[in-house]
Length: 117
Image (cartoon, rainbow, N blue to C red; front, side, top):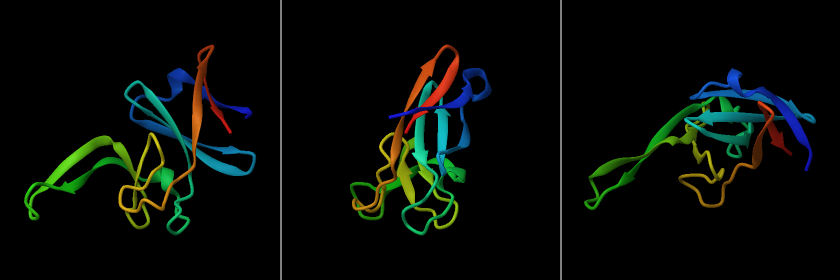
């Protein structure tokens, strides 16, 4: 894998993202609190710009079929086109086990953020 510079750590504030071009493909790099994530910017559902979506949580059915619970706040990326949801850490779709977004390693070194692709 090759490292690609995203930028200085201090420029990517908590709760923000940077979408960079890596060898012809777009990769979104996220800083959520003190953790960093990198995912492909292409939603596997319909090719939407996934990394421009909201960071959110999701709902699951509670003990009773009409009870909904809010879970995983700040761990879900929701596509802006059709609201498909993916876990930032794994790229796995929340609603469809067959769908997954490619994820990449993020490395912090010498005050800079790098993504390994």
